[in-house]
Amino acid sequence: MECTVSWTGATGARSAMGFVAETGSGHVLAMDGAPDSLKPENGGQNLAARPMELLLAGVGGCTAYDVVLILKRGRHDVRGCSVKLSAQRAESDPKVFTHINLHFTVTGRGLAALPVERAIALSHEKYCSASIMLGKTAEISTSFALIEG
Image (cartoon, rainbow, N blue to C red):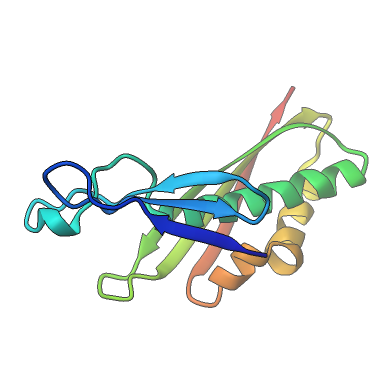
């Protein structure tokens, strides 16, 4: 797996902290930092997601993929899946994630709680490389809601 991240450079009268990533699969995404009122030269322009937000989004995508795939393989009539991630970070550098909660909302016809709970557990404990990796520094908790539909 490869990815190239390039600084977009200074723009206008101040320095910018924007970056563009090109993934090995050929996709491009932007990253930026928050504006810094005390040191504008060190801040971003708030034009894209923060790198840590993308890391959190990656965990959500990885685990949602697993949950949907596990349910489909079990022949469950899953029709939708979303994950709301809430995270806390350490107060001092390195500001790693210390706690992450993943709240799944799974929609389907005739879905029972047990298979959904099992799919989430399998993702969390065995398949989702991203959450397992972040679990080395963060406490990860999960919850879910089922919606008939």
